[in-house]
Length: 283
Image (cartoon, rainbow, N blue to C red; front, side, top):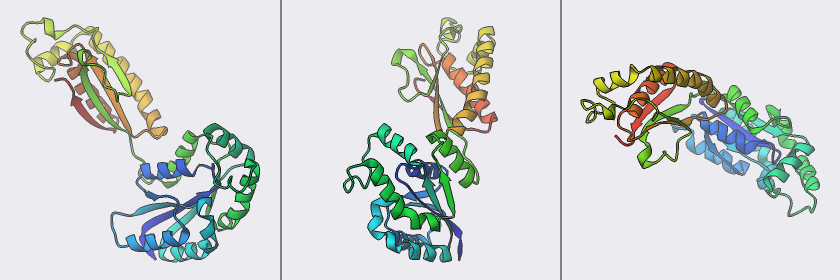
């Protein structure tokens, strides 16, 4: 058996959470591929078995390939003999599936064969029952929202759960707020080094400008409040599965106050064990 690789076959009832699960697995380092017939999945696994870039693999299989499901048991047994693997089946009760389809307004894969959505769901249960019997892990998602399902999947399959990657950006309001910013702090109320003649032509990276900004009473309180907020919110972002966050700090021109604060906040965020990157957009 090849123990270097770990393969998760993700299957289950349409609307049970397969898409959320595959996206979550991708976020935590799995190579994910969806909607493969079982026989093709077997050939795919054989093809990449010697590639070291593919260590954790998730393969989505659902009712869209039901014409091939009669070979699923044989194929999955073949994969299990050669690789460390498991089959994850996502289920939910009829009421939950009906509600989700009404919310998304997407057609059920078997609706072309059935006029009634409930009939399509019941038919799917019959067709997928052999797969459910084969499964190593069955998760009933009836009472889960997408955030809760993501959290559960991460807790099961993440060996080293990722922290969010935080980009800290300084900017000048004269050129507009960054369109990709998730969190924005406005520093224009702080005393402006621009009006100090000896500091006007310097930037926030200069020690003299840095000392001027950080020694202001307003700056000290502002930073204290921001750090308290970030200490609370960044772990929440991680819990919700947000891995890329852009935090923007703005002043009038993007040259002095915002640059100093961005550098300070980047150091603080790093101390919380989050990876950071600093961009001074208008410097």
